[in-house]
Length: 396
Image 1 (cartoon, rainbow, N blue to C red):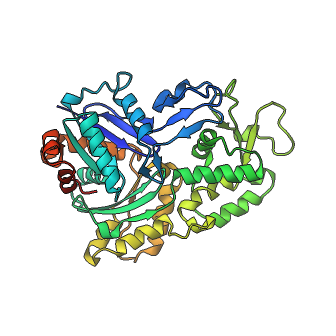
Image 2 (cartoon, one colour):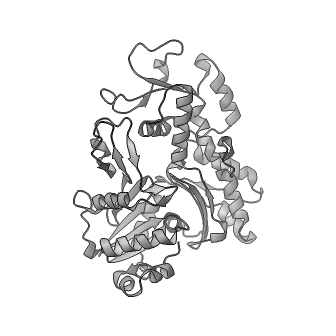
């Protein structure tokens, strides 16, 4: 029996057989401005000649799977002959879903996986549980960890003790990568260039130039300086999709500090945007979202737990999800949590080598476990007992 592990994120699906490597593939469909009628699915985005004004059709809204037609088409493509050529009669699937997922979504997912695709056995699980499993496997002496999963729609903070999640201390912050990209689009559109339709391009800009400031006010002051002294300012060359396929940062020595560039390139000049956008993860109130930032929420979550367990969580903070790739993210989380924590507690913040595929790797490990058989719901179980057996077995 082979096992397919699918970490079904709202932006990327991380997929692969448990005995192979993982692929990270956009979990959505696209329409391009030029070929209006044709829909591109998942990694067919690479075939689009001109991705300016790219229109995204997402299966997830606000972190929950609501558009099943799109999700089906993405899955058909992933499981089909172009990608994984899944033999459903000989395959189990481990698939992730969000915390506190709605019952109606869980039931639709059971039906699609068991009845339409006819997988032999299914394990539905939170991505954090897979990350925690991976962490406990790497650090066998630890009993507790707190997973900070900062993804596309939300940031979740979830304490795990002996791979059981502590429901009473789970926190969700409604800030994720999608909001950051949208905010960056808005401020660039206000300040220089109308880019509200250029989600794809601006997302690339965000990934290339944004970083988390260690001292917000100091960086703000630097960003106000003129000329050479302004080390924050950077010029980003936008792609035109004929000669420049992908945007890039102008090297420092080629920057023209006063006046215009001679070449016909389109330039975005970014200064405080570079750190003011990721700052929203730490101070959502900057843009009027009345919630805690990540470090405060970590501390608040741990304080909801029994006192004797708290020191174990503070020294096992694990960062996963795409936003943890911002330069300076780990250091900032560490320094702020350290400030908010009693001095007699150790604080340790771990950023895995690849925070995006970390939970997928946890899924790979679970599928090799001896008790994997006991965790899944088989097709026979499902056909006999329906949704109720899944409710009993899966702790969502």
